[in-house]
Each structure stands twice: as C-alpha cells, then as structure tokens.
Length: 267
Image (cartoon, rainbow, N blue to C red):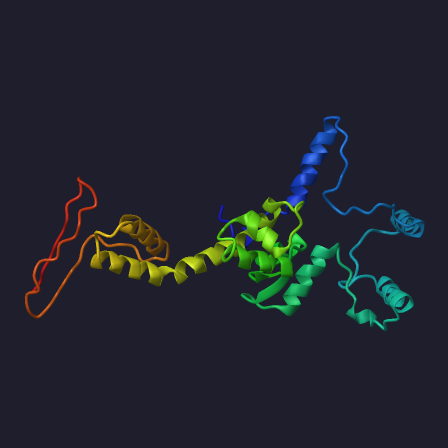
C-alpha cells in the first residue's frame, strides 16, 4: 500500500513513554507518572451532571459545526468575567482537544511550503502537525542554545562539554538532552562549516603540488580530499583534455595496485 510523504513525521515520544508505563502497571509495578501534564482534579460536578442528564434524556447526535452556541456564549462570558476581554462568540470554535484546534488554525493561517517559527524546545505536536500539512517548522532557539551552537563551532572546537560551559549551562544540565534538541541545527551548521572550508582544502591541495616533499602534506592532502568529498567535489579518475596543439602527456597517480591509470591526450 502506498504511503504519503506527509505521513512521515516523528513519533510523539510522550505517548511511547505512556505506553511503556501502562505495560509496567499491567505487570504489577508502581509507576509515578511524570511524562505528561495530566489534570490532577476530577471534572466539575456541574459538568458531570450536565453530561449525565444529556446522555440519559436526549439522543446523541451531531452538534453544529462550530460547537453548541450556548457553550460558546458561556466561554465568551468567562473571558469577560475573568480577563475583562470582550470576545465575540462568533470567534470561538469548540474542538476535541488542542490538536484539532492546531489543524484548523494552521490551515487558516498558512499555505503549503510556508516556514513557521516555533519555540525550541516546545510542544512536539506543533512540529508534527505542521509537517503533516506540508509546512516547514523552523526552530527559534533560546539565548543559551544560540550561544552553545556558536561556541561549539568556534572556541570549543567541537567539544560539547566546553561549549556548554561557555554558553552558561549549569553543571547539572544533561549534555545528551542539549545535543538531541539541537541535532538538526548542529548537522546544518557542520555542513556549512564544511562548505566554508572547501576553498582552504583546494589551496592545500595546490600547495602539495607546489611542494610534495613537505612534512605533513600526506595528512593535509587526505583531510582536504575528505572535505571536498563531503561538499560534492569528488575526485575524478579520468581526465579528458583537448587543445588546438599537443600539450603532452597527463599522468595521474594510481589509486591502488589493482587499478590502472587512464591517460588521454586529444589534439
């Protein structure tokens, strides 16, 4: 069965943790739940009584699209009583939880391919719902996270612990959590750093040509080749040379004993 590309989203990890906790409880283990912000109180008595009366006395059918008008009016009144906000009930939509509201809001605000800024770290479902609608989530990092990324690629020279100290994280901060939260950004910054050093790698290889006997040139050449391979400038095994007049013979070093060197000279 064909699967859509938009369905390829990361799992909501908290649900995996909840399932593991459920299995542990089913096996008789005592679990203290800290994986999700569950309400700590039961539903209000008036709400429970209203639902009980509706189920007992009325048919269970569909409501109007935006939700019961009485409920929307009462929510409007609550905003006025609690927050002194004059909220038009026509602007209120009743959804089955926040995820349904996100889908409606994102569909109303954004077009396919739009880039949408979200806090990082933040509520994971923002990212998943945006991706499912062919939108591009863009992380907006905290000041500490930006300092960490800058330090990682400058003063710390790739040392995660040193970068955390420079950024100002406390000693109790879990480095693994920081790296996981910034994984995509670290990879992107590494790719940019590699591309930025491509010219230096080319000049190093030219330097080897000028002085192939210099100490350390073998290591420099190897490092340069690694950088150029990663930015898409892979070495070629064959050169086609054309000129109006004969230019002589071009000799390329063999890769291995088993490989033959190809040379061509075209007039």
